[in-house]
Amino acid sequence: MICDMKNDSWIAAAVLAIGLVIAAVILGGAVRDFRLSDRFVEVKGFAEREVLADLAIWPINYQLVGNSLDEVRAAMDSADESVIAFLKLRGFTDDEISRTPPRITDQWVYASGAQRPANRFLAERGVTLRTSRIEATRSALEDAADLVSQGVVLSPGWGQAARFLFTGLDDIKPEMIAEATADARRAAAQFAADSDARVGAIRSARQGFFSISERDASIPEIKLVRVVTTIEYILD
Image (tube, helix red, strand yellow):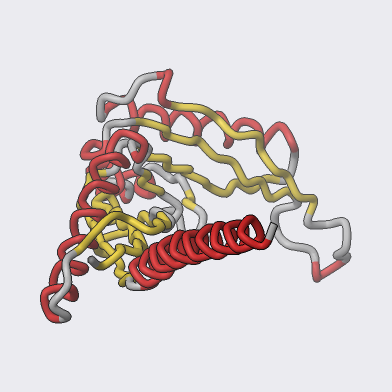
């Protein structure tokens, strides 16, 4: 009986020792993995591309006055014809040209006697050009003074109202993200070299927002597309 008890104690001690060894190995591996995953560097990658706008939207707004609605309507028709003829002379088509509804104000409603303006009705009217012909639009903007010589009273800020847009972002997104990621990895490699380490796998990545801005205010049709990515790399 005493011998059996001694054997049982020895077996239990051996099992306990083996268990402790296995636990130490597992714990050591976990600590090692934790330390490796704790060694990382966060870097930012940048990509920039210059592109040409592919859509122009130019609202050509003008003002008209008259003492009767019929007079205003006649002036409106004449101005519309002048603006549309101006655009068609430069190669634009009916599909690229649309008219906006007029806004008519009765200036005598809140004025009386000597305070009344000479013309009772003030109308604002517009024709909008929407086209992919960027250079032709720029040329037309430069020639817009021809409309004034034809008696079209352009509204203030008519030139600044023209917008040049870039709509092809989805086509260049993958390449730009790849460029930004490569830029981030170069930065991480430099950091690792300075730290006597090696760049490992990506720990996490966050893609920034794409921004589209004018390269130069005087050349609004040339755009700059930018993106910044933030990436964490594990260091080995």
